[in-house]
Image (cartoon, rainbow, N blue to C red):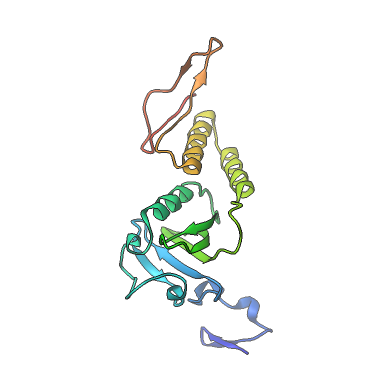
Length: 192
């Protein structure tokens, strides 16, 4: 079987040159939702209705119309963990709509767009602690100085825990502690 793409037929002899990033399709085991930076739906896969309870056209609607506040909050926290080109975060057993249907989610950015790919979860809630810690360490290793290291560390802990504020303290030998003056927009204080 062959597919017509970009005015040429694709077969086994030229499939390595097929523009797979432009096909407009997703494998039938899952769905795709593309969001703008202000969480408006800009694209969805054709099969999204097979997985999520939706009505009408989704394009141009806020994500809050189809996703719960808790799901959006958790996804935003995972987005805060993304660093660098091709970074990807995974969330397992997420109930996107509050109806008990769990999905495994892959979350990444493409330019300014948020790409959410999901498929029905078949696993128990084991999470992805190893991948999360590995990603956190990788981001910390990229810090150019200690201030950036502390900033990134507090940011990662905030995203991982979902807390509104995370502060980094420096403790003296007598057990007293101090934080640096000022708080960043995400509610973090940095200590050098």
